[in-house]
Length: 310
Image (cartoon, rainbow, N blue to C red; front, side, top):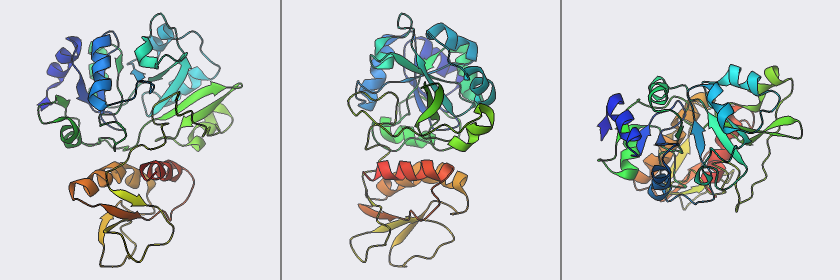
């Protein structure tokens, strides 16, 4: 159910959950000050209680209230990449951050999204928690209809059109006197190097029992369809190919085009839409063409495909 900006704000203030757009993916939003609404998010998504949430704010100064310590480089990152697809994981001021938000961890994540509608909402409601607007483990929603497919046509959605980034924010934490990436996302490690003076390393260690941020659980972003990631196209046992627009594939298989293999931004934008299309078209098994670079945004794309095919 598409709702206006005014209705979305009113629903959030009265304790409801509303799907709202960001530049990355749609999120299920609830007021940080309403524990019942936050708990409802976990129920709606079927989200494990050990999977923490991200607090979305409209201004970087709001972060200071909810944290115990601001690491070196915070101001540089915040001033450069906010609003935008960057999330920072910081020590939590537990008195002001409910345990349910941080999954009882000592840290809490923050982001300022750049979508103009979402910034307007945040300016009216104050801080919101907002995981991706999809059933837990399934492909994220990048269009309003994706949210409605998962939660029904009566679920309130603030229609902000298609998300132009298409993959989630990059999450960084401060460890051993340097920032490191704990979730790959729309911003690459190379992007941060000119501003920090070093390239943040990607920390791929995941504690399945106590993930420190969203997106770390091994199987994630996954369609119902089985994705085959073998380098060689199988001779049998598949119904479709997830591939690139300028490449030639055997004509007997249905082709789902991600876009051009020369355009990582286009592929990232289309990735979850294609995963969802596989399911809506009843595809059971698809081979994914993973012959593309392992650098820049392609690294994030490959990681999302790997987790979807786990």
